[in-house]
Length: 204
Image 1 (cartoon, rainbow, N blue to C red):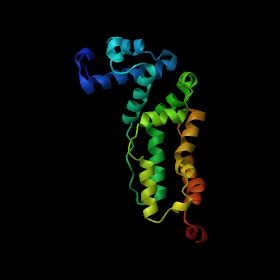
Image 2 (image 1 turned 180 degrees about the horizontal axis):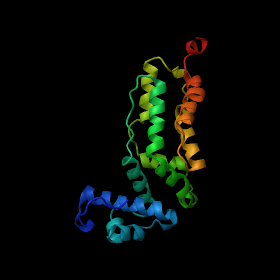
Image 3 (image 1 turned 135 degrees about the vertical axis):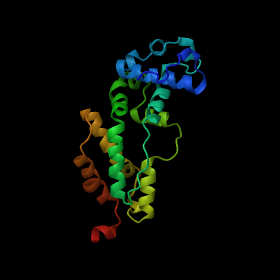
């Protein structure tokens, strides 16, 4: 991904300059992995100088955190409103499956050197990149379903809350391929919903 504006990067200021730098950083990370992800490489890709980057990020760890957060912002996920927990979850997983395969691949495969160097995990990097962001789309879906009586909140443990997205993420990391619609429906219908539905739904 190259900077989208034709204006020379040296003439940009503020948010426009930072976005162009992060576009260049994402391109370097995708093409060369963490080993090639240096301030010098990103500066060369952006057509600027290392001090321009160093004024914004103290080193490549900080630049990496900003780059991953930027890549996530460039792939926004909207909250579906299908009227049912099943419909909302399937819509969310399809959206993530379609829009974030490259981001998941980079975080899971390209950053082995970062994890080894820092002792951090994929979960740590995700939390750093989210940086106190408001509740996720999944949180909104589960809250709405609870209000409609589709979920027993006593069953909704933290591990179960994350289960649908975790299973999708695991598939992507293991296969480097998108998940089929049939497998997405299987996650929702045969794994997640039976675990969180109120008892009366099971009895009925």
